Every structure is written in C-alpha cells, then in structure tokens.
Length: 450
Image (cartoon, rainbow, N blue to C red; front, side, top):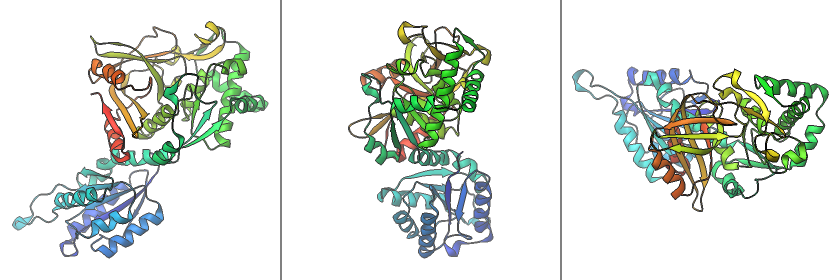
C-alpha cells in the first residue's frame, strides 16, 4: 500500500471513559501503526465538540487522506457535524462488537454511535464507509477501505502522458480533459510523437546499452527480430523513461498506430509491456480512460501489473471469454517465462514486417476486468470479476481465457446494449469490492457482472 496520511479520532463521552475504553484507542492505534501509512491522532480520546474541532483542524493542516472515526463509546452528538463541516475527505466509521459487563452494563454502545454518525454524515452529504471489528485488529478491518483512499489519492496525483493523441476512429478513447481533472484530479500532458522520436534519437550510448539489455531481459528469446529493431526498442524504452521524468508522469496513453511504425521504424508494443513491468501504467491506442482504469486497479491491488485488453471472443456454454492484445502485455504476467518471445508485429504493414511485440499467454489466477467510461451525466464503471484459466498461446499476441463469475450472456448483453467501450483493464487480483467502494465515494455508477 502506497503511504497515505490517516487521521484517527477515538470518540467517547467523558463520563463513559474508563481504563477499558481508553485502552480501546491504544489497541486501535497499535494496530493501525502496523500499516505503511502515516497516522495523525490526538493523545487521548476526543470527548467534546471543541476537542473534535481542534483535531479536525489538525487533520486539515496535516493533509490527511482519510479519517477513521472510532466509536470507543457513544459520543457527544455535536461532535459529528462539527467534524463533517471541516473534513472534506472520506470518513470510516469504525465500531466494535461488545458483550455486557458485570451487572449488565453496556459500556460502549459503539455501533449505535456509528449509526447516529451515519445518519448525520448522510444528511450532510459527506462520503463515508462503515467498518466493524475489534480494536486490536483495526488494521485488517479497514485495510480494504484504506486501499480505496490510496486509490483516490493516487488518481489525484496521477499524470498521464498522452503521446500523439488517440488513433483514428477510436472515439472510445475520447475524453473531457477538464471533467477528468475536476472529477479525479488527474492531469494529462500532451506529447507529440515527434518529441518522443527526437528524444529516442538523442539517447546516449550508455543509456542505449541499458535499454537494449532491458529489452532482451523482457523475453526469453527472439523470432526474426533484428538487432537493429532491438536497438530501436531499447532507444524507445529509454525515451519513454526520459519523458516520464521530464513531465513527472506515472502513466502513458500512446497512439501506437497508424504512423508510429512509419515515423520510428517499429511498433511500440513490447516497449508498452516493459513500461507496465516497471510500474508505469501504459495503454494502447491513446486511451486515456483505459490508462486511468489501469492506475486505479494498480492502486487498489497494492501494486501489480494491469493488462490493457480487447475482449475478442466468448463461449456462452462454459461462461468464458478471451481477452487479448497484440503483444503489449507486461512479461511479469506471463504463464511461463520460457514462452515469452520478441516477434515481428502480426498486423503492422500486413504482418511480420516490423517488430517488436512480446508474445506469450498470461498466467492463471483471480482477476478483475473493469473500465471507467465517461458519459454525459458523469462516469460509470463496468466491473466483471472472474478466474483466469491456464491458457495456451492459441493465437498471436497475448491471449488470456477468463471464466467470469457472472453470466457470460449478461456480460455481453450489458456491454453491447449499454454501449460500453471496447477496451478494458484486467488485473490479477479480486478488487470488486474495492472498486464498488471507490465508485460509491466518487459518484460513479457501477455496473457489476457477478
């Protein structure tokens, strides 16, 4: 999990404080501090509106990304709106299970306090989530919710390099730049293909050697790819790295055809996979919503390597679909490294004329396919979890067969009848619940096939 700043607020009425109630805060903080996050908190339980205001203002100064409101006991009611008025980040309402103490005393009334807070936050249009568990396992209980906060923070700081614009006729790659910026905080930097090519031409000898070595190490072998093409791929990889540093980018959307291979001499497919291998999410065909979805999945999964795909075939009988792209998958997703091979592109200039693709089938495991889609009203998201099957390399490029959790007919009819884009992002992780929580907080309409 990328480090975020978490504000922790332990709540109680002053008259309810006991060593046990105070100890719940100590347990919760001890657990929370096991996570790779920065924690901001008061030294003691917050028991008055004035204390809550003071702590809320501290949260704002410290730039917290999410606030955990822990109901160590039922709080003073005025605390909740005082916090909501000042906190503009998601709030996690954390309540504890409890049993009656000696004499039948119900010492916390924790859930009831959280219930009251949910009502107030809802009325004040604040974004919140609910978590339920023991104080000593707070970290595990809210880990999923914190990954959502991490993803929101990640997208707010994401800078995508749009290299060359979208490809001809791919209206699915269109986007409203200012809507993207206002909704997610994501910045798009426009980069001309000529700047990329010129940057590649000016790579030093030492950098070229590093790039060529990285290309060779990305696959187990080559098939009809020349040394010159490997050198061009090495140059290109280092050029993308230089542009990422120059413009402070952590993602690319690349116009990979039709003129790319004519201008530069090779297709960028294998290099796109290499960028993903080093954590720079890169989509093909100038697809900004695709790059955004890749960054989102990567953040929710705590890392990993998203695969930018077309859905190319399906079978209603066994509830499977095949996702694929032409050789731009990150090699870290390969089924077996000895199957990876650098090839000529199967389509460019009629096929097998120019490199470089990295062809292999992908590994099995739990996956989530998703895509953020811009509409006139806002954003929606298709979410389809499933299990990637052991897939033979039955076609050129990077195939992966997925057995989806939901009905295949429903998935296809949803895609077609609701007019979803033809590009998707697949990640080897089950992040359906996290995507749903993200959608709830970010006012995105989720469409889940499960």
